[in-house]
Length: 153
Ligand SMILES: [Zn+2]
Ligand SMILES: [Zn+2]
Image 1 (spheres, helix red, strand yellow):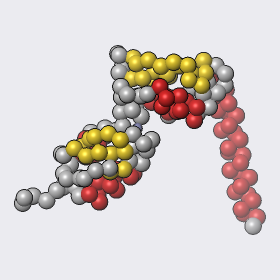
Image 2: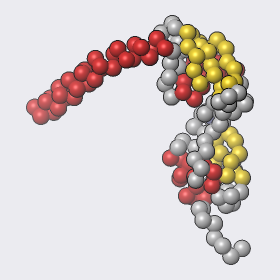
Image 3: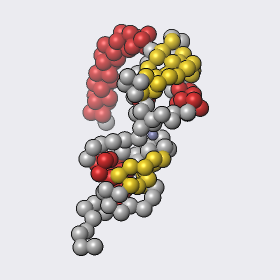
Image 4: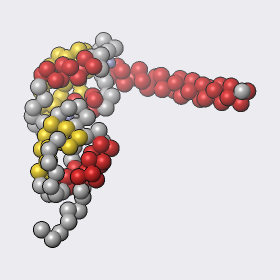
């Protein structure tokens, strides 16, 4: 009983919350299993040392989980204005791949983790390349305008 736990519950909850995660069970030590809930509501078992040192995160969100349900993928795609077509698991990279009708109307195929980070179909990619230059110019102009209007006040 002599040794004090290295990280106490407050530290763990604090650290988890920085990533949008919540502790859902008792916490004993960094090496004992605990339940956490990710920002998207997936509850799974892990150890704090894995989360903290090895930076392991929710497997479903990373597209690594076997248990992405079809309903969940449909919902995720819908939230991002895309329409679910199909999905499969790529055994080589151990990730879930989704096929979808993109918000631009094009047909897309992406790793679910990349999709959730904003990757879209190749047409969107080409379009983004075209507009990023324009956008950069606009943003610089807007900054200048808001700066000068503040100076006037
Ligand atoms: Zn998750
Ligand atoms: Zn698109």
